[in-house]
Image 1 (tube, helix red, strand yellow):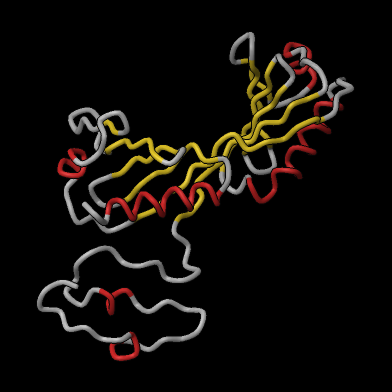
Image 2: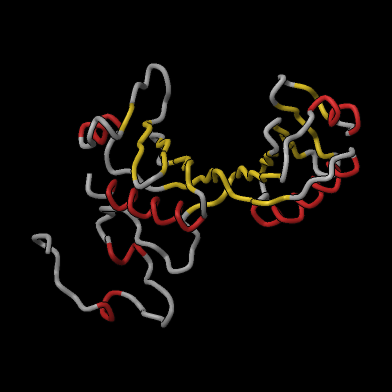
Length: 213
């Protein structure tokens, strides 16, 4: 226990309610350290995601471009498509895959994939979806920093971090299976996770590590 701090039991300093954690201000009356997790409060929020669907065969992009309105040929290997319903974009690949991206995708990925498949069939392709997987989830979060980015950079293994403020304002940390873009305000972008749980667990570990610096 820190010198000068009186030892007290939990009931002496805050009210405890079953199923809830106490307010973080009670754990750090001097204002030191990071706030503790507040029960079910969200640690992060999902900004966007990328979902990839694999089809039973390849796609003739020229034919798809001719028969599906709203498509735009980008290269010989992929075709861009704007879904008119919500202005969402999809990308079709010659190999027989299509990719969906955007906000709110995780909640309705199956519905959107079926909509795309229907349009592929209407364009003259007798194909089915054999696999749908989340390729990447991008999240944002915020924490309180007790040190500068320069100081924290010195405490990380150089193989795990990049920080060149003259070129980019965030410190890039590759830890716990994801990548963090940490800004001096405490805001961060998390990318590389395949599930929200994976992003949450990695962020909890990262924030805990930052609190020790």
